[in-house]
Each structure stands twice: as structure tokens, then as C-alpha cells.
Image 1 (cartoon, helix red, strand yellow):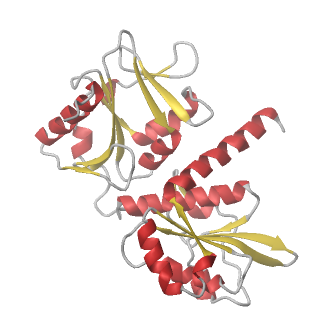
Image 2 (cartoon, rainbow, N blue to C red):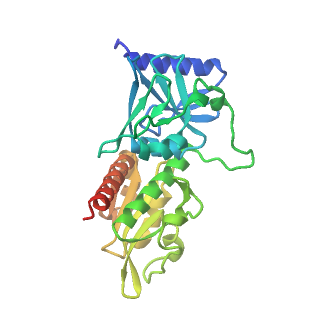
Image 3 (cartoon, one colour):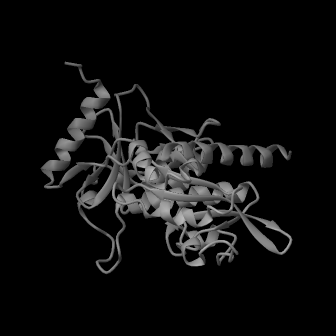
Length: 308
């Protein structure tokens, strides 16, 4: 039997302590990071062994962004001992990422000092974390109003992927469209980041289906908008209705049709029912979209930084 590392043992101790607070604990298998549904919260759990002066945690931008877009999200930093845990709102950490050291691949170096404050860029600059020290109550208290509609993890990640696809399209100079106006991505409505507020009508497409496609990138040619890329996000294991919506663009031979999902086997099963046009559909994992989004953001920032 494989021996657990110190950080793995700390993570298990954290989960056991969470259960002691009468909180239900469930691993969120939709995410690749070590994230759990604990009580009323969604929690990314990270652990570091006891250090001489500071505690170090490596965390990717994409991971923090995904966590921050969930309902009631937190990051738990276990600092060498289960008695020293910072339970920090993920949105607070996400908003402070620009002040934290990172490399060009989007890997952030979370540095927590002996006073258990997060080290920020600049001499003696810190993010005070006293209020979050061993604050387990945050995980079992739902701060959202009861009348608010709460999204599932799948629904939140669906919006994240739509937001990332929209941002990539914007960076590349496309006219982006998305039907989900009120869904949120990084505290903005998707309607705020898309360039087209209504879906253009096309001669050879059912407009009712067209305007329901998750994300479309259009190119402007004269007075017309031409669809060049269309995307459907399918995180559910149920019936993939998005594949049917994409079929309304079959007559546009230059339009690339993408299905973003994690289940390649399910994709092949669904596409087999569209045998006549199955070669038109392309399968891409959600993780690959995240990597592309990160690369596009980094290139754009580098271009701005060097003015080229």
C-alpha cells in the first residue's frame, strides 16, 4: 500500500475535521483539482508541510478561476498543521492574483508567512488573513439568500467554458455571440463580454436553433456575418442536445463545429447517430480549452507589455 505524503495526510485530517463539524463532505469529480463540497461551500484543499519561515503553495490561474466561479467558493490552505488552516474566500484570492508572484505559464506562488498572511508583491506587502484562521464556520454557513437560484458545479463550469471561449474569440478579433445573457463569468454577465447582443440571421440555418448554440464566432464580411466557429459545451452525461443544435450549420461548409466535453466515448456514441455529417464535428476536452485560454491571455498580455 502506497504511503501517504505529509501533505496528503494533512488533507485527510482536514476532511476528517470538517466531518466533525457535522458537515457533509463530497469530492467534486467534475474538477481535476482536489476540490470538495463541504457543508454549504465548495472548497479547494491545498496543504504544505511545516516550513522554517514560510509556507509555499503552487496553484494555477485556471484552477483558481474555476473555483472562484462556483457557488460559495473557498480555498483552504493547511499550513503545516491541521491547527493552522486558512479558509479564504476564493473570490478574494482570485481578485488578488495580480499582486502575487507567478510565471508565464500562469503558475502562482502562494507564499504564506509565519503570521499566516499571504505575501503580495512589494516590500512588506501582505494580504491580512487573521479573520480566516481556522474559521470553519464559513464552510457550514450559507451566506447566499434563500431566494437566490443556486447553480450546480456543472452549471458553473458550463458558464466558465462559455466565458473562456468568448474571451478567446474576442482576442482573435471575432464577433462573439452567446445566448446566455445573465450567466456569470468572473463576476461579469456573459452578455457584457460578448460583442454581438443578438444572433445574426442566416439564410441556410434555423434561427431558433442557431441562437441557442452556446458560443459562436462570426466574421464580418460586408453587410453579412459569417459563422466560422460554433461551440457546444456538454458536461452532462445525459442526452447531448447541443450536437443537434450545431447541425443547423451543416450547410455552412466552412464553419467548424466543436463539442467541448470530457467524455470521448459518449461523444462517439452520440456522433454515430449523425453518420452522414459526423466528420464535421470535432471533440475537444474542457481541459484543452483551459490551456488554450491561458495561452491566449498570456500572449495578449505579453503583446501589451512589450508594445508589439
